[in-house]
Image (cartoon, rainbow, N blue to C red; front, side, top):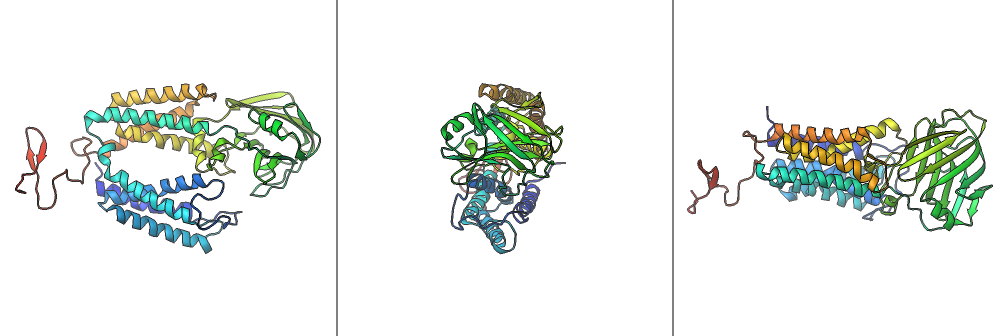
Length: 436
């Protein structure tokens, strides 16, 4: 059973509208909202992430309208009116939300972008003689995009005067760690108490390959992120947070992505602090490179991977309180969706096998060449799952003859009152000059 174009379009409009409502009309606990200007285009410290996310969020709505045969200005009007409704509700009704002009622009642009993809289906539903090349090209481009995004997840501490804090109360949904720090070391630099760091330039250099040692009395496991040690600058911007979250160790540092106004994940070692007994004096040593992060606690050393290509989803949205399970599921879904387009374009099993080999090869070899750890098996499986899923979906949405020609749009020269004549021998359509 094949699904028709208008059925797909209607489904995308409905699902897109529901997804927008779920993402924008739910309250955000612990956030006051209204913290940015109403007329800004790229707003606050993760404005680029919000702008790109809004475009992606509204694109399925525009794509669905294109498949239903609507014009671009209709898609623009629908996107703008829906966005205006959302922004109005965020002003006074939905708690913890910011409404601004930049969101309206990005949402409207997203609807038009989705419409554009809908009316250029001849590119992403190509004829069989072009499908293989296009499918392989899209797969390689997707892999390269992941590597480029991975580069943004590297330390980039800002040039400023730093201030060291011990078990601070930072707000933003973070708890206070109920322990007591007595000494901190960063590389060769020792600190016997919190306060202004005179050697801020030296600390900044050390934070590119951080090597921490913290002596403290353990507190009760906090339910949310609770900083043990942190560094902020004179503008109260976060530089580093070394924290506990339950039994997990969390390390968050300013990244290159943050400089470009994107978001970014922290690094988390699950259950790394499980052996800590409240009230016990311990020395925690934490070292990090692009390839790995290592924790030494009571002489026991544990190392895990650093950032991987599957973590690049966090550039657009990263909930701080997400644990290992949520992050793993999100990484799997992200990679599957990204490689799904390549599978959708694939004309057959042979091309799909070439795409799979290229994707696995790039994801295995690319990160080590950039200094990162190889892509873990579960993320390779996600890429392969996306390829297969995309190819499977294409089989149910292609034309009756199984080809890749787009449906619903007449070729150039044909139109109302100008019927097309079929040349059976060449399988081509013609329109006579007299309009018959």
